[in-house]
Image (cartoon, rainbow, N blue to C red; front, top):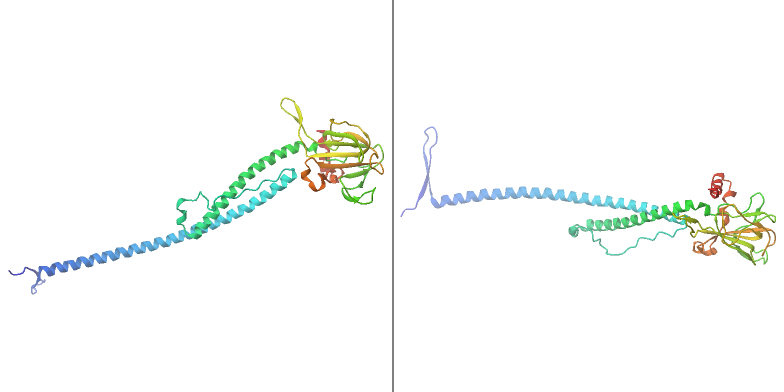
Length: 342
């Protein structure tokens, strides 16, 4: 049986000679297959080229985006560092204010817990090492700053309350001299000195004001007479606790422990008794030379009621810091001295 053939007849224009081509059917299908394979291959490689070009562009975009994110994290870390410096200054201010108001220092923010924060995104471990480390460090710093800020808010609330309280308590702060400036002088200051009786080094816990017998001695702030007694060393002496007077909404009076107490010694006469409430400027006694004394004078001392505030001096502090009416600044001395008249 003869093999099947496929004949192609080509008829040229202009009455040219007709051409006839004969192919076996197998060769024709082979040619068609080769053509289809070629077209398919060209299409595949063309698609793959465009795909790779798109992927390369996308990878470049992702790399640029990644660098932008890293730079953003670094900027955020610098901003957090600036916030840390600000919080350090706020904490320093807090310490100064608390020291001024004789308050305990603010406790430091405790540290501990996991090394890696637990509020990071679930897929953060897939991030590059550099970015992951930045994110962990930044999250920990922000968490610490948040805790410090919350604690600072509480601290400033308590400071504000203490400021209001202390502002109302100014008349309970010993702010004037216990004797008239034009009638007395300072004969012995606070601190190291030579004992007038033994000649040995000693520490003086107050200031001595020398003058004539009978000079009036005044309470330097409002308070309650805690002691009015005769002592072997201080002679006729008065001790005043400057405890603020509290009156509740029902009119009931009570006292609150104050910051200071003042001591007055070597009087010739005491004019107040234990338990008596006195006000700033009130005469509480007369100058003398009772007790362990070489001449008429007043031994005046200021002491913290909480001796832990000045442990090295058993609570005593320099009274010169409180003699505001002896300063040359009339604004300060006049304001403080007038608080007892309110």
